[in-house]
Length: 102
Image (tube, rainbow, N blue to C red; front, side):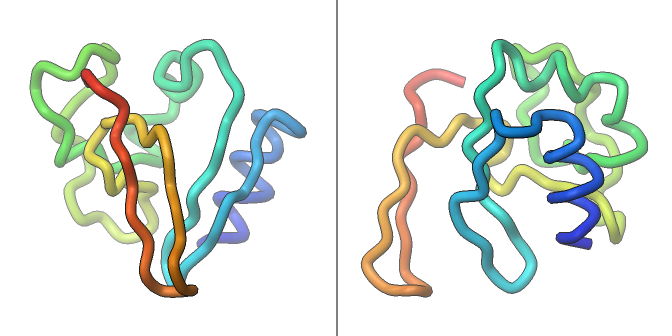
């Protein structure tokens, strides 16, 4: 799963504009330099993403409530919020500062 996300989707779509920041057992965190990430993935929501935890008023315009808990779908664990800062105290303890707004 993480191979597909990293090499077949993220690196193919963004190349050097995507930086893998860290991985965990079943997750990855990226910094992606793009004007509008949600616009970029709009055509892939139903086939690749779980948007079930996004708020219904999310400003992205992507379809909400798609693929809840479907195995193999990519999920934003921040529920559609942008993560502004991550810091790590040990290999398993980390915290995130969310970008203000949605």
